[in-house]
Image (cartoon, one colour):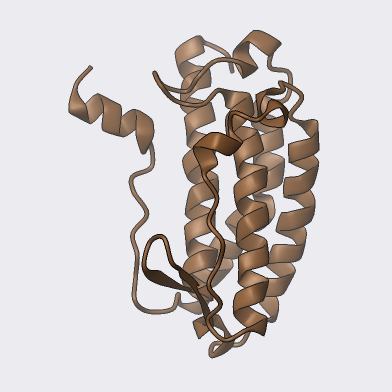
Length: 182
């Protein structure tokens, strides 16, 4: 497999592009629309998949479809809580977690993705309401990620997780195409 093919499998929509300025009102609406609609999109993509399909990795060495869905629930739960900490505290240091280890836990190996879909529905509904309530200056509030030595303003968090949602959704969509499941 070529380097380009591997890159396309890993980053089907490209890598996240970090920007230093806040999104325009139009871009903010688009990003919030992605976050609002994502749980329904992911549910639609996995609905009706067979257990064998849910156990299929999206690429060699990658997670299965089920693990991707469970990862999304884990990751977005962390990010939602980090967002609230950033709002309520002065540049809090967040606790990281090892995604690859979480993906090996029994609950993440289950092909029953319905609990994770329910989590995503609730988290995204509340997260969107939270983001919609922020003023421009409040979107500048940030948390510090010590393992990455980086500060994450809330406007970046909002854009990053809209990208993250579509990034993993496309992993599932592209695998379904390769499997001939549509």
